[in-house]
Length: 319
Image (cartoon, rainbow, N blue to C red; front, side):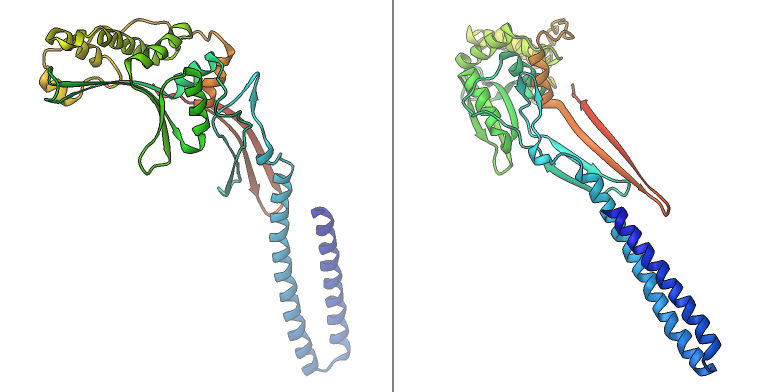
């Protein structure tokens, strides 16, 4: 289509140039000096209009070429991404761009099952390795006999468009609740009771985490069992619980460091975390941390237009 249009415009341009040349020759031979001046003036304006038309046509060709390049790609709205046998869960984006940093985006629509369908247990473990959090909070509160309030939470936070994923996670565990986080576009799945957390712990004992998050889980598990036996209600027990907290996540807060200056962090468990036990773990982890992208760059010049395409899959995980 574009090539045929180029040929037609080229023919028109050559024919117009020939007519102008013929007219100039005829005018020089037969016309008077005044007529020659008027003729060349009008012919010059006409030639200027032809040049402007050629510039506009060139810009049209560039736009049509870009559309031809992008048009052969599958429509992003119709793409379904599968890693056998389960589909990836989180929303992904396809990027189109050229050398001038013109970028468009379109969200891939995934065929997610209903929010009540349970997940493969290894897929769930992989997703928690990517997105899950085990947290232990100890804050001063004089309403408690120990003067310290202990909170323990397992949570997963996502954008509200992926709330169906949290619904499936909740259905799989059979415990926990889903909350909206203020006015933000975030939703969070949380498990906060000892009884429910024991269900979560049982899952990860059977289908263990394999990233560094496994260390936090083991410390979190130790704290939960410690609290379940009410050992944290004594001064010695509280000190031990704080020593566990000191080795988790970001360690102790300034408040705890000031209140318990002599606390020594408990030794972190030495765990081998480099073995993938089941391919479904990779599906879950990729759903949380993976990125699929198609990058198109157009390099435009006066004589030719080159295209470079890159298909990219990468996983970025922060420890």
